[in-house]
Length: 427
Image 1 (cartoon, one colour):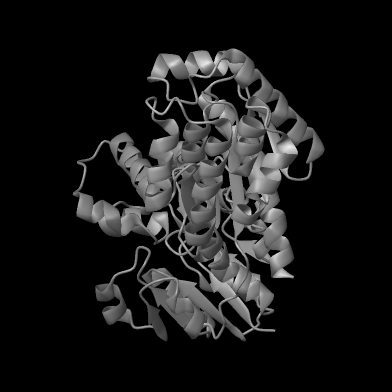
Image 2 (cartoon, helix red, strand yellow):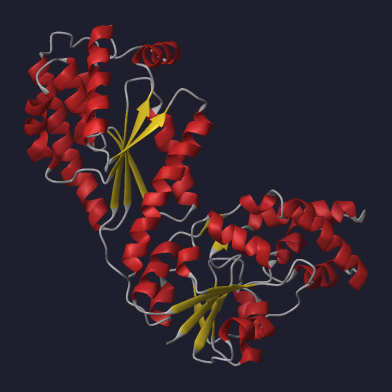
């Protein structure tokens, strides 16, 4: 079985910001003049001890001390200043699905490498992760490749710096040099490599792996007005993007030019003569356009769709709030939804009185927010019923705490479901 070995920094994850911050800290602690930004950027990729000697002119002992200073801050905090490159997750799924064994060989200490890979939920993709021990001052990759592959030469190295090229060449396997990370065309021209790619997409052809096609994932966020849906959608999107997911964020009513015009009609305070049934049909009309034009195409492309509200809001607000009947509104929306129900719905559970107070303090109330408390109480009771009746779809989150705590709780539940899906896709 063919094996693929990935470098970590600059190949799987972009850790540039955290590394540069830690390098600056170490140089300051060494009490020497701070070099230019251009020189510090050269620390991205090569082994630290080598970089301190090569670029700062440090002796071996000074390089060891600088590395210790670096690890003081990087190993405790700066390692989190990191993100997975776009497209990497789908590439790894495709490789596993096609039977490849995957490895990580890095100059980063083993404990930190494992921490990064586990933090970003990439560990289920890799058969082995190899890096130096904490007390080692790593200066090459050939030995680590041998430790990972046990002498197997039916492998290929994917990396972004000279150390990857030289290590693979010494071990005796071909190497792919990537330009989307910290690599440069100048370094490639100087050392050469078996292959070169400009982006993650280019790896499919080089690695002889067809891109896996699969259905995307749909997440909606629900709750009473003022519960923090838009804020939590944006925070969730940021976290998911940092983890390497391809996210399309949208909202209801809205999400398309036509649906946004309907949104204007629905929320305009001057349209206070609008009947409850008209309101229900307008929401369904905006949703039909949204599903057809945005949601279904994105899911077919394999993207993760993240929507502020979906059909559950209509069932709760128009069905229960206006007392049209939850079943009636669900049936009215069935053609609009067209089978595109969310895989997961996050419900922000906040007492409607608190939610309304928060909303009114932050902005002028729209037409629907002006409905009396009994309307919003009925809507909240309906949401609670939907959560109870659909436990496999809903994640109910206590929304009474601060925004970041709520966000962390949402993400912890959502990422667990997404990883379960990835494991199934990998076969």
